[in-house]
Length: 335
Image (cartoon, rainbow, N blue to C red; front, side, top):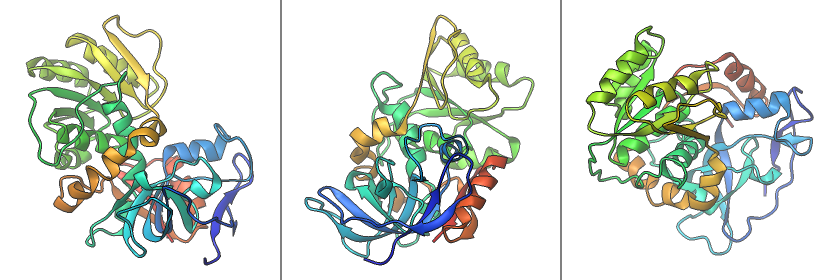
């Protein structure tokens, strides 16, 4: 195996340093991938800057990757050396992290990508997909029917707050593939982005009338099945979503941050964790749905990649760029 370099972080808030990380051979049910593009997520930034949820240092971060298969472990079928794929690392060990030249990934979380899709496009998909699915499909959350390439419309509606975010983009596409109409919010410059993903109606989240507009529109829908709060800001965002949902009959809100305790009596909410779904049910998405959905264009690699540099030293740049905020983009580094 070639020398494997990684983007190491020695402690909370420390700058990235590039150094060698020796990898083992893939074990049963695992795939070794040579990474060609990686994406930076808000949770990567949180862990890097604060050390939250990090048990030891130095550490290698990263969930999202795309590249080519080098080796497969025992019991793995459907993947061959040289195949172009995307994958999601779970950060269960240092070899199962994305910010390095090679990553060992559970085979259930690997998906072939079309020849027409660039690696930097493909790597925006994995973590957002799993995060969206964790809220949409798990029992105890929204528990929707699984997505299908051939969609059956159900005449039911989901509210998505933050439709142009990485997670919001995935939520819209999966909900539509599950047969639901989507009403969402975004900035006005990202309305077309949300419509391209399949949203039925888009409202300006910054409008003073957005709450009343959403309530009026959702009351006209046949059945509202719940909501997904796909962004973390402003701090009262979940309360706002809950207020809207309460006015149209109540229900469940899947959230990307801990919900407040003082919710309306007819609304419940719970924070989603991508690993909860990916670790147990990832095959249903990454292998049963996504390959055909990507090939047919039913699932798109959005938001668009914002490539901030080439090489692992650019991971530091990526963290800094994302920490300042992006809009309808995902920060990507090519390797």
